[in-house]
Image (tube, rainbow, N blue to C red):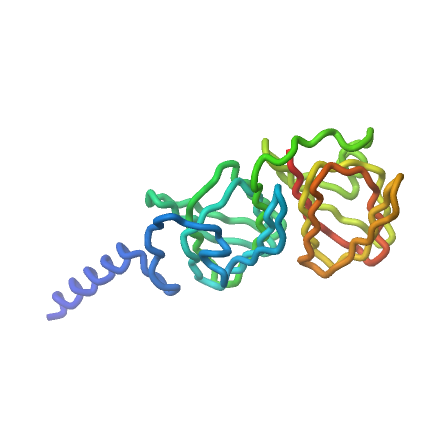
Length: 240
């Protein structure tokens, strides 16, 4: 009787593993025509802002959570927390996704997958989807250098590929950086921001908001950024 019970438990465990079950429930069914992530799993993904070049999306998974099948265009993912997860693909393959808060992962091609949070803690990511090629950025609207060359003490390039460049920027209280140019971009505030953009031929523009505020720049632009509040930080994703 004991031998039969052990054998039965082994068969049950094997069946559970084959079915892809976990404490977070069974794996999602294979997709027919997967849609956008925030439509497939609105409890995980929140669309914050979009324009003709970018969608900016916040994602939060509870411990052990799996989302639903969805698709992404090429994107940059900035980790707001440590991440320990796995991407599942329609052909049955998987890819581990691990990193520390502040790290970046780039996906150069469109993908269909679902994500599983393997950690015993919540994880959060902000996604910058490149909607289409957009306009080809010029060196700027004038003769200003790119931000990371003009003010390397403020702007740090974290990652880049043929489509996107990811930059983290940190301004000390009262800091104004040097005049510089940007291609079209999306910026996500990592801290509260109280600042202004300064232009040579136009009035200043205020830039204010809480952490999580998104700013989209639809065309190349030259300016200087003046922080008029406490130290602030942003992650900036530029078209290339």
